[in-house]
Length: 424
Image (cartoon, rainbow, N blue to C red):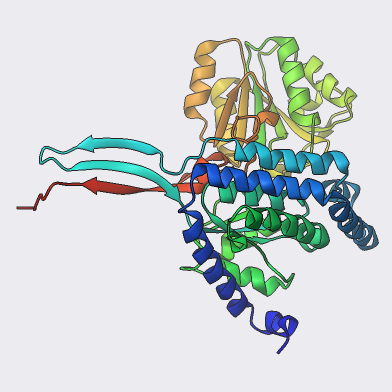
């Protein structure tokens, strides 16, 4: 039986075989020093630079196929690599290599009255499955974060980037192996069969965690079907609340940047809440419309500018990922908090205000992974948080929240040291 037939007829066996190999490689990886892991990542970055021409040639195949399939301009832009973007991918690997290694960090330690010494120590999670779409840089980012944190990774990229992912992965693995790290610590699924994704999602006991990165339909499927713990967010419905005490120029600039800097990222503002007592709401909405943003508002928002269209009920729960924004007028902090509690996806929510008490209340009461004061929600990014590359943004309440980088890819174990104690 050839490999293609085996893949198409038995995806569960394929995933199991890959997982077993990945887990064996992870055990070897966990024995390496921080310096050895960093050296391997620097070598991987060098291999990507050395193979730039081949990687770009493979990316050209994906772009041509994407154009034939009718991918949108935004999707083609996510897919496209050029010299600068590829250099950025290699630089990001080097940056991860230079980050502090969390593995082995002692979270806390205590000594019991009986003399037992207890400590909690960070350790890798194990084998992490990463399912993603479109962006070939995720192949390198995920691989680098996995290796640096001592985890093996099983990557399953989207069909749009299959040639690019294969080329990046091959160069990355060559770098690892040249530095003495087992190549199976970073594996790329050798098929685009959707059944293989299902096999990953049900590989409890083999895969320790799944991280989806992609559109709403992908993440929804993963969250619905997974029998493995999932670290993910479904939507980025991010709010900016302009409080009555906001400084008008700051409110204008923050709102415009939060929406228009990059409209297609999960940290882009999707709803603007304007306090009814804020005196410069017209200036804020005018700046957004003049920047090319289409606004959809409630009755009072529409009265601010004739260019605002009437919003419907679905707008308040829509992640546009485009130059479209919903706008509502709210009667004070209580109304803003109520709106956010009802419609936020718990990703990133922001207040603009010069009132410190209002800011502290907002920080305390908004239940989102990232809560900001007087800053654009576009800062919701692991790199901007000083974490290096991120594996994604987590909006759940367990394990990790917000940008997930090295520390978020670790768990801990208790280490107990005694001197012959027995329990009475």
